[in-house]
Length: 206
Length: 206
DNA sequence: CCTACCGATCGGTAGG
DNA sequence: CCTACCGATCGGTAGG
Image (cartoon, rainbow over all chains, first blue to last red; front, side):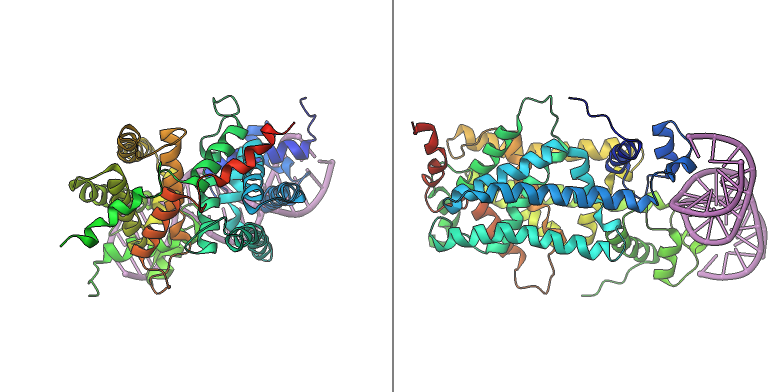
């Protein structure tokens, strides 16, 4: 199951690991060359620039996320079911590519124009997919939420920290992570929905 | 209400804004000097090194977060009430210092040892405060959660994206943000807790 | 893929 | 706070 990587793919993979751990700007082409066991100048036989690597990683991951949500939304169902599938799909992509996901989520701001703008537009398009599920759930009465955009961003931020700790050999499988997150985000922490009212009770106190 | 800033404070404030927007590594002392209207060499009359600025920002914010949670936990109450206050306190600190918060949350990895280790230890201590509230809530039956550490990190990640969009002049006030987040995290999205069961129904289907 | 090298820029210091 | 400057390192190119 070990894929044979072309030199270009090796460069991308090694660079992704370095970009994640040191950040794009703090990673030099000499760092990358050393990690690959070659000279810095040799890298340029395979790629045009340092930024090209970042572009490839960012847009490859964008594509993966879109393909995953396309698959998740291919089946119909209640908004709840669709949201659950979208979350699971997102978690699958994140856990399958933790390093590339970290770069995708944190290093994109080092893209120069027009790629920087393209990235932001794609991100908004992706978030819009979640927003439309959210709207459907609000219309159908499945969801009750203060602000739909706010809710979507809270959900996504609840998903996007996974790459910071997920390890394939860890005790939690991707499906389990997705299930736990869905449970928390859809049903909340409290055992009964009245519990929160307690914190407002002082309003009724003389 | 405009505080008069010492030159050192001006340097820190300007550097914080640059570190947030460009990242620590991509911000040069010449960038900082230009933003301040002085020469790069002059900065060193006030600070010892570029990293010293980062250290000061990171540990000043750490202190603010601890002071806030100390205040939030000074009053007793149910775990639900304490969690709600801890969330509100965290949101207050985040919204009052969006730029410093961004640096605190994203640029700390550029700290060198031993500060890097100190930072991580402080972060764990802070998370432990939330974990202990979570444990109390589980013991008392207020909370039902798959994994307590997982739940805490999901909550914090749901809070820590706020700095990316919050504007003091925006339509949502910090208290409102805290309330919306608490509502979402404690009660979830769904109008009734049975809704999620629908997505499991295929298990019972022949 | 390497040697040899480029101009630019980096964080920081000396000395006033 | 400035001028003048340091050695180190940067991303990248020429030419093989």
